[in-house]
Length: 104
Image (cartoon, rainbow, N blue to C red):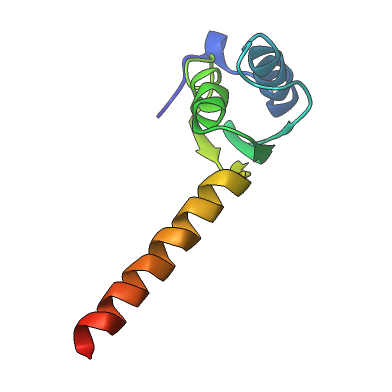
């Protein structure tokens, strides 16, 4: 993609706009996403709690002027709910006991 001369921006300018865009997203916790820009391509890294935060961080940067692309390498921190885990273990043990009883 070739930009018109008046639309060209330095990587530092794009990075500053990208950081501001993320900060304006109420769904994305402040300072949990790192922004790097090289040749107009934004790379997002960090660790967030929810898939929607991951998507919001990317969407905040896609429409920025002079951005050639966004690579979203943000990871999602999965939370384990002890109650859900207990239910899953109980269900697995029950299935195993039923299967074992049926084989006898």
